[in-house]
Image (cartoon, rainbow, N blue to C red):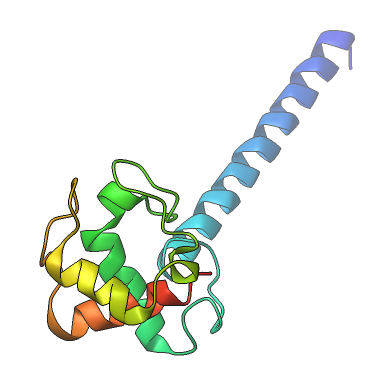
Length: 124
């Protein structure tokens, strides 16, 4: 084998490894995404039960466009540590009644609003 053949063979091997790793990584992310979209979720981060996972799903569908999928903020404020500032009842009040300056009232209602408020109150 000449130098050019070795170069071609090593380049092909490198590409196969990169493509294989990329495929593996994408299937791992898809699997993690089906569990909440934020990687593997522990019971603690889910609020201790499946209600936390449901609350996160409701948040993703109704709140993430303004507050960020990672709670990091955007058009609305960050909520990463909102439980350190507000109680569950205060968060529920904001969800139900809105807050001046951009937070509309009633985006989530009833039991779903209570679940999200409890989930967010645990973020400290």
